[in-house]
Amino acid sequence: MAASQKCLGKGSPAPGPVPKDHIRLYSMRFCPFAQRTRLVLNAKGITHDIVNINLKNKPDWFLEKNPLGLVPTLETPSGHVIYESPITCEYLDEVYPEKKLLPSDPFERAQQKMLLEHFSKVTPYFYKIPVGKTKGEDVSALEAELKEKLAQGHMMRLRCGSPDRLSPWTNCLDDTPRLKKWTEHMLEDPTVKATMFSTDTYKVFYKSYKEGNPDYDYGL
Image 1 (cartoon, helix red, strand yellow):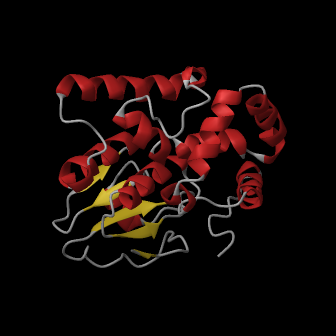
Image 2: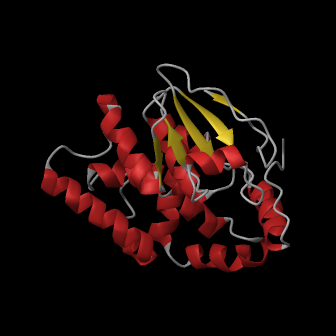
């Protein structure tokens, strides 16, 4: 994997074509939605490169690829562009089937998508996870894989949050042992670790974001 580490903004030169047998992800280092896609790329071992985008000052060439200016955005060697976080993840699972994250059975796949949709709206769903189980031993493939890989970006923001919300969220997890244990298991996952920053780094970024001048390149 190659990455443009520092974000590219308005006036920057466009990157070259996507190399053969690669896929390119247009991302932002601290974006929880783009982190979902990075997690899937890493979990499936897909050869890719990353181009980070300045979301406050987007390059014209990026807006030509995706007029909505959203990350994550995928680009293939043939120039096809795919965006929206859940769509990019499902696309990767279909195009790179070697390590499937979703079941082949249509009904089971629909069930797991419903679970993921519920999670995006109702965090207390995870109170149901038995404390004695680890890494989804008694749940579906999506729970074992995607709850770690795709939801991690949002869940870590419950733990790290913006500086002024850090303490309340931490206290909330202290009162929910099953959810807290679940997040601890996620943090042990090598793929999750590869896409995370320290709590202090998140705090500095969210502080800059709140002040209206997000430091997308903080820590580089």
